[in-house]
Length: 399
Ligand code: ADP
Image (tube, rainbow, N blue to C red):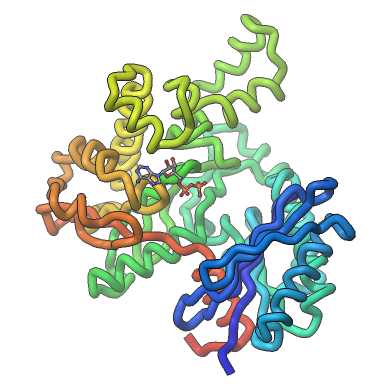
């Protein structure tokens, strides 16, 4: 019998699920439930390249979505092969340095971290309870986005603020995309045919949300996202680093509230805010090519800031063996990679145009003429990482 892991990523009104063979990475079934808790709630299944949508009107919530998933698994005779459930959890605070089997204490600890991820952790808890009620006889595992970064040294995660704010509220840098970094660091080592120990990587996860990390010996040394995913690189709709005085400036000049300014920084800034066109890199690249100067400026800022952060993360890593690109932009935009690497000649990196054009659309590979250091592309697979961690903790594998 093949054993599969069900990987779940629960938001407040959505739920993504994937049934994955943790050994081969094969994805047997994908599903996405949307508009939960509304009259339009529905779930779409993807199996063998075919899509099928089902209304969830009778039970338009997370339990309804997971029950629909169970029915679908039974139809496909797959339900008995689900040996464990892995839950993506955004914030594990300082409590979790690695994934854990979910028990009552873990549930309470995820609740304690709600203050740090008020949009995400409550939805995860709803998803965990719903999944436990339907998949009641298999282990459930929490895989935290923040856990991988718990190895950062204090000098990297303490802000230059009164220290008691850290002691009182846990106000510090936590970082995100940890599951992706963990997977990509292992893959980079495998592809370079080197052990993770001794390897100094700077990994740029460039998607709609973007961050960058220094990973040495397979451990995070520093990362650009902070208390929340707003800090660091400029992103699709997020500003990334700004002068904090902008808050009082905008409050005084525009009369905006803290909530309004925070929303603007999260949803109306970044590539979208500068270009005025879109948050989507493909659209902005096309606009820039057709002569839109603001679209070009948005890209110039994005590339420059990534390059600047690569240099900063090289300080954190102590040296650089490989710069690794991942995420939607990092895996696919050869223009962005060429522009970023083009600003890093002083580190000894030199792009190879042909290799850069080849490593796209799921294809990994080295993209520089230089080998020491080198730059490479490694497609991320957070779901597979969650499935592997879940399988390991559930005792389905010895690896
Ligand atoms: P998320 O943070 O939502 O997971 P993704 O990792 O899926 O984001 O990345 C989405 C980004 O990747 C978008 O800006 C999209 O335009 C960009 N992208 C995807 N394919 C390409 C491509 N071929 N060229 C340039 N950018 C691309």
